[in-house]
Image 1 (cartoon, rainbow, N blue to C red):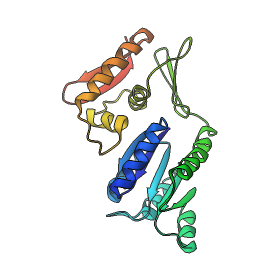
Image 2: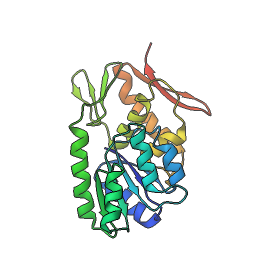
Image 3: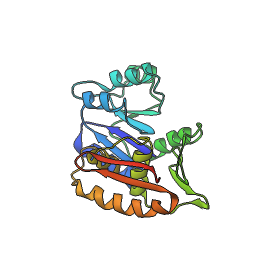
Image 4: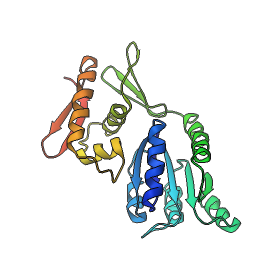
Length: 222
């Protein structure tokens, strides 16, 4: 799964990111409400972890905006507010679940698994390029003879490129898909993953092209 974490407490956010990445999920990390409001309008995430108390724009406002736009992705609200009225406000705004701080990671993980099952039971979007098929819900890449054995980070890279539908994707956007927004990993790492993925895809009629200074695009080989 590709999970968006919106949390302004740096320590809590990093703990969540490490936990989710260890479980095999791709994670984008955002600390500011206004940035999250804009980011969620164009990202490709499957589940949103959303804190209520955020700088600039609070979590409830972000959630209401999502639902008003018809964005029905599962949302788990995180908050130090544990009173019943606050929980009702979050659920009424469209949250799928509500977890008060502090919490145990085991319980957090269980709630994410529940939301993941909801995602996996919805109709999956399938993208086809060359002789390769990508199922977004399961995040699997298949060739003519079945699933391809591709490492997790390269799958995240492929996902971002194939769902761009031939448009350029900046190196920074790819880095965010690999390590999450706000990571301290340098951009040249992207070149390593692109090179590896490019070699895997060439036999299937798919190529990754680079536009110097602009980004990368994925397309079918002529």
